[in-house]
Length: 331
Image: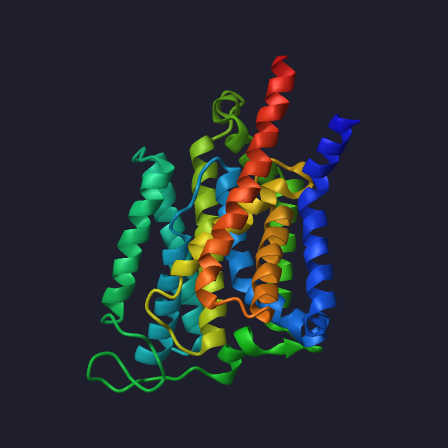
């Protein structure tokens, strides 16, 4: 009986806690459950969820992309510079921003596969390189419609069509939420229902066995990092279109949030592995907690501490359960 209760708590514990938090916040702060606040929560985690889905793909392939925060910042700066400094327009800015993330992902993947640099060291190096490059291409300044590069006047402005990506609504629902839902569905289908996705997870589970089965492991690992970089840059495009400006280092906080959402997802339904559905729930969990605590007037400077606590708890639940299962199996 005790074992059954432990298994139920392990498999459904996070979801039960998630629902319990929603009930507590809603009953004590009725404004929490309003449509407006629900949209605020969903919109606040949209960028985090998109970036975290990229981290999920890299982890599914047995890697860990530490560069996603710098990719967000770099894509924000590339997009903003293309529109404001060069006057290329919103479409060109979006394309260049997305391409920058894709190229960074390819760069990290090639460092890992062909230069044989360990994943965390390669992506850590990419993080510093492109953080610095983002500062160089903008002269260390934020990008806004009021100033061009150096002493030059701005050549373009953020159009309403571009800003609609982050601010527009479809039937009362912010487009960024719809975009996040579509991205999540695509990643879920990719990892769970496509040959490439299943092979990618096989590479992450046992690369040597995949290699012996004829899989070109290196190519799939590069693919994983390319997708991670692309999704991080998509998050950056959504972010700058919502803010209407490009701030230096704006992506820094998204590394912790994305990693936390991904690892919290390990504890969803006892997955014990990277999974897109768990990642989305992890991002929502963080968003609900932050929003609820804000309604209770918790100071903003406690947020990183709370996110860290949530991450540690998720890791304890996931990995202690793995240890317990392995112990039972060996016994």
